[in-house]
Image (tube, rainbow, N blue to C red; front, top):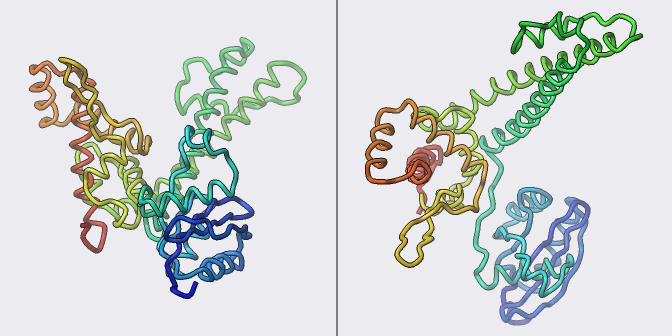
Length: 348
């Protein structure tokens, strides 16, 4: 270590321990070790890595989950952290699977240049939006499930129970179920009433939780990206998803094309013989792709310029699916331009 050559570190993250591997510039494996997922363990990992020489970069799997704490520590410590995707299945079949193998593979991905992505910083308004959206998504799923269970119970309920709820729909049916008085549970009708009342009160509680989260999300998203929310067809929910996909730090996205690929809206050729056509990239953030799809659908229905575009492309022989692909690419470009306004400095 007398010449102080730089080293590259790879980390395979887990809930209780992180496994790290160190490579020299020639790609030789110097050492591997496990560290606990505590602040003291993070400090031990950084000191251990520096004992082999100056650390050039640290490749890490799971920067947004198990490795988030280590990412914050190493970034504050002064290391450059690179986000590494897990090895593809063919590589794992050839090389096997273990924590040590994965840590070494992460370091080799960074050393070779195959991995070069900057992880999300998760330290500003977008992280706040992401956390609230996680809670809202869970409440939405639980509310939908409760509503489906209510409908199923009413269909199979005794006639007396069904008759008391006949003609009620939507929230009126929910409130009707919540106000049921089952009395002693001594027959199927009373048991069904008790179940319906429990599910309806759960539905109302979840709806109140969703409304409360929507208030916070509306304020945060509008304050963070007012120009994005003002775009035609873009609401608070879709704008929040696009913000979460982009992240807090601008260095992750080099261009609007990179953002489009991140959203799964980048066209790739699928031509063969005399057929010349493209389709959208099936990778990327599928939630962001879904947000672009919703924006495109709304614009196709009620945005005059988009309706004119659809009519023109239809006369050219394009199918609705192909037109939607083009629109999603255009919307990704437009959204990226407005996302730039929330960041304090330009992107190269």
